Length: 337
Image (cartoon, rainbow, N blue to C red; front, side, top):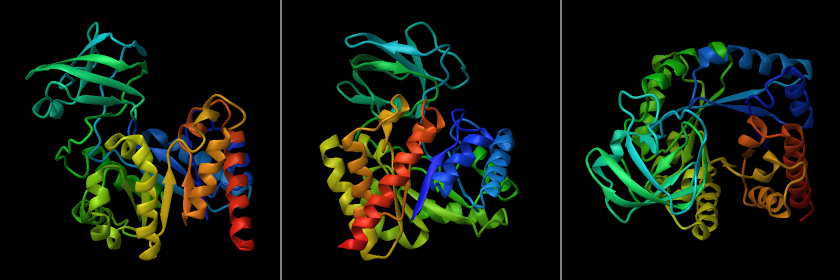
């Protein structure tokens, strides 16, 4: 079974990466939503040298931008309080927000209307639309929090038609092999056409051997899953944005259904997002978190992954230890059944 961490400032030194590989990490994810491979040469070199030092041949997955929408840059983290009013404006041609304003992609203005909900940062922050116009959306904060630059934004139940790949995605694919990339994660897969487009881009870059990881993050992806299984090497149950597409209590049965389809078709699948979220600030996970990891293995997952826990959390080494040990516990249980 593959066990992935995510590289970021918290673990991007050789010593930390070596220890994570020693714990049992088999691969690592590099999130390209905010950067490009050219700017990450030091990190990709560190991954390679750390793995070689402990005798591991690492898998390196790059997580593309894909058809994902994010807010613009903020001057500083923004504290949003319940009942506070906030204005959303298009960030086209802008780089910083105005007072009391957050910049968002212009694609939202054609589908926004009063009484909708808008989710920010994987649903951590909830806005209620009071007024929607062609140039701005006036919202009330229903669930507050600290908002930072380039976080995700979504309207539950609304599917936006966006191109499969961005120009930065294409540039990163062209550079993938020279950085030791072994697999490409495509966000928000909606149909087999998205995966066909990615495969063609890999072929054009002479990188067709890279594995394709199809991230399921919308109900459109869930609905069309069976039709594009053959076009992916592995399915990713990406519970962050997927959880924005439904009431959260419906997410566990959707995860179970995706796992069942993948098992029936013998398609490997990964479970990711908030597996050890509390460990971004705590040395010890919750009982629910280790049970979640255990359940993913029991459902037949071929791989599991942590993200912010190792990329930006306070205890990346401890998080990897708990992830690996819990996977081992689940595998022992399965062998003894």
